[in-house]
Length: 226
Length: 242
View 1 (cartoon, rainbow over the protein chains, first blue to last red):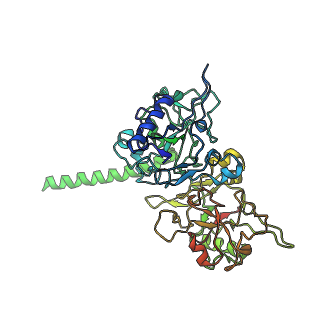
View 2 (cartoon, rainbow over the protein chains, first blue to last red):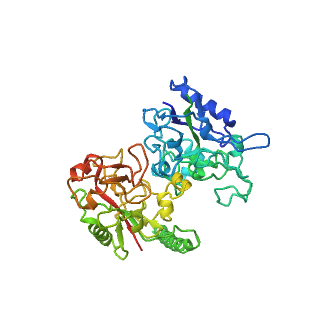
View 3 (cartoon, each protein chain N blue to C red):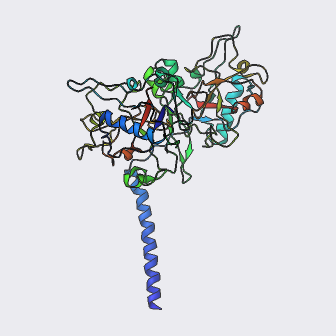
């Protein structure tokens, strides 16, 4: 196994303790299933800050190939994973509902699994493991690179669990007014009007409670870099 | 007795009030954002023609789309099969993408209450085929649960009980255009149920290590049995061209 979806979120919304905290979480989950002999990194970008260059998710995950817990290949290399050419992008990688498994081999519940309006309520979702939770935090553009604009796409580089100020939520999944926000993708490719695995749309905020409002709980992708 | 009568009267009042409340709810919905209804302009043929890759050419396939659509009350559109044909002497190639109008295209589904609903498959040709790199990386909204038949049914794909029917005939490259090489990718322009091969996509976007809806792999042959051997039954996509 050199790829998995975290079986559970860290639980503090978009605050993952930065990249270091997210990487450590990947390592911990991998170790718990006997795969701690590899170096695991979270598939997350961070945005440039004064004196701090951006980090691209795609530059953090080694060169592949990556396999899920059942030995199924997700992608042979970075170009196939991201679709670096038109042809590769149109074909797409092999990440899908059946291969996008957690480190424990679980399928990630998506849009058509036990659909229930309470899927948007963290109090329900946290005790209902089969409810929809198919949004993976990535903070990345479709090519796997960090955003270069001034909006937040990374919950302040994975340190924020804040929600928008009252009255500024306005349903927009981007963050034009500087709202806390994270870009997400779908391992099952079902949603957001495009089905991107790594860059479909933003979130309503960065608190744990705001993530389920669009069907995520703060899970993310982990890749072995060696 | 009077108490019982009072109870009955009270009950009647409650029922009447409920009816009024329901009626008011109906009226109130005008003010709420409702999912917009669009006519169905996309479906996966619920059944194939049964003769492998011989569809009676493009004309036969188009007629099949039209007949299936008509059977569910959608015959007012002009339906075309999403199929390419390859160039032959004196006969230019036909690109599937040039046959299906300009979109947007909507499917038909049924909600849990049985109400027909429509969800978008794609806004336009560029999004459907991924004409730009970002469009291609993102993909369209065609996926297992949206690629419905004209009856609103999901097509069985990888992991579902057999028969799996997710191999959808297209004869096309990923950009929706005909192949330009010498090999057969269209079961001899949809007239062969024996020799040859056809390019297929996956309605569930799962299989062959890629996620292509329109150009994932070639079939083993053009007979019905050959189509079935890799998870197909000769289904194809139908789009309303108008």
